[in-house]
Image 1 (tube, rainbow over the protein chains, first blue to last red):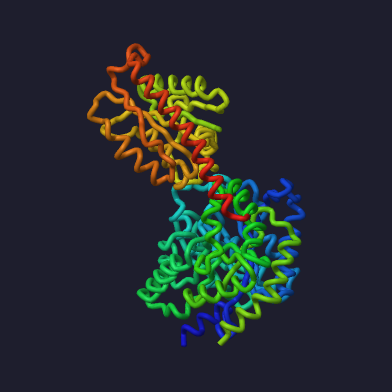
Image 2 (cartoon, rainbow over the protein chains, first blue to last red):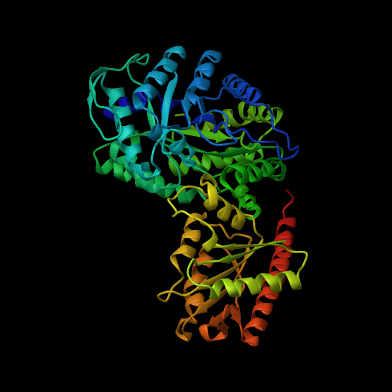
Length: 357
Length: 188
């Protein structure tokens, strides 16, 4: 019973089936086919428009990430999210992720509670540790404190969510004495997720704390990520939480075209060239080609293949939300629009039909 | 073809001497190749702290980016305490796990004792394999006795280095053909 309340608190109704979302890292990369990069202004407006189109197509969730590096443009992701909050009416909006380690949890909470009010109760926070770590030097933190900064600040963020008047002291921030953190979100509380990258350890930590996870993956067999899901649930259960009632979201590359060949052809240069610029290494063609395999976690292919993949992943993970990343690497906006059309008209109805209770 | 020579120690002169000859041999045999020698003694490279290599600056950024940009690398290293020197290990630690994917790596070692002959075989090769290098299987092992006043005086060593250079370039060309053939299988 308490479990059901938890799921409801996180604004998830399992009866509605698997939620479908979109996420952007807010990358700002040239289109590899033309070598041209749209201005930052245009990229930000396109992200906002993407959220509106997603909403119109019936997509449940839209999120924007924070990376303080070259080739990114949503460093101030909460500001972009507040524009999205105003531009949309019903889609859930979140960060993907907020790098809580190098921010002040009080300010983050103030920002997101405000976004929650602007959006009339649709905002969520996904807090991560950063996979690109430019933010540490830029914002004046020591990379050696990577783990500890996250753990302490994430804990504080969650405390602020639970308690309107906060008393707290820690190592990386001035103590809080009877601090009244305002405004409060619409319902006094908002969903906060832990962003989990490749490391099962991070998922285990979330499990111990009874925090929902937002798992992002590049590629590989879905069964590999099932181990992370299992480890998460086991840790939750060891600490007295009902794992069946803790929401899980998965996130990864998505691209639909008429055939899987076409999808690979249209997507590959964006991923490969984009990763070279942001991570220093491309994506090997051999591994990418395996992405269309029905058991691979990358959702690339024809609409029918993608439907089957998402349903297979849902059967495997039993997750509540799938979040697609399709705008990486300077993907032209008309291709994004076409993908949203396919999601709305072909993919979503099938996914909902088969996962709705 | 971009080939980087990496002289992996800041101690002594034998490895640098061997690497100088290697670069000379490379230019003589393959004048069209684009070559760069990085002698770690010439750079202030910081210890790896776990960040992505793109996030370093100064010499550390230059050294890692130059290596990441290469098609082939020839590593020269002394052997200390029956292993590679910390300076060279640090370069590996600075790079991503799959840093040598699609790269050919050849190697030579200088050592004070013949007892160290298998260190490259059993120690360096396993690191390179983990980092996904295409390894030139035959390496050159040079002993102290082969040097005199910063020159290699053993003609057999010079011939072996010439062969290492040739093996590295031929394997790089061949590997690029293999890779191309592999990629051509995919229609994207």
